[in-house]
Image 1 (spheres, one colour):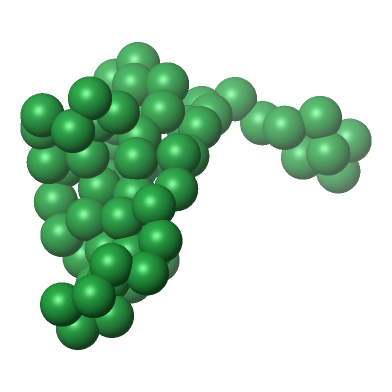
Image 2 (cartoon, rainbow, N blue to C red):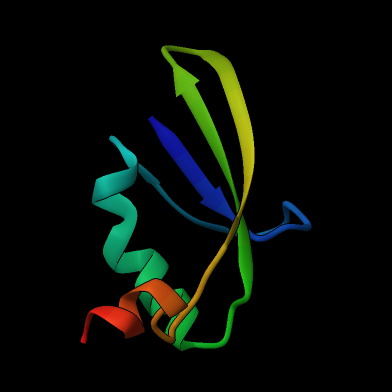
Length: 67
């Protein structure tokens, strides 16, 4: 289970079974101008990790070179 929230920890953007399920929400947040979020990962009731994730809306240099 993961929880996605703003970096201040004051607003939750949702809880998801796994990161792949959060992809539409993360995309929407990036398009809305949110630059980064914090993701907490849980196994059962135990916190196993906290990650800061940068959200990008434009293609990466690698993606641009593929087109």
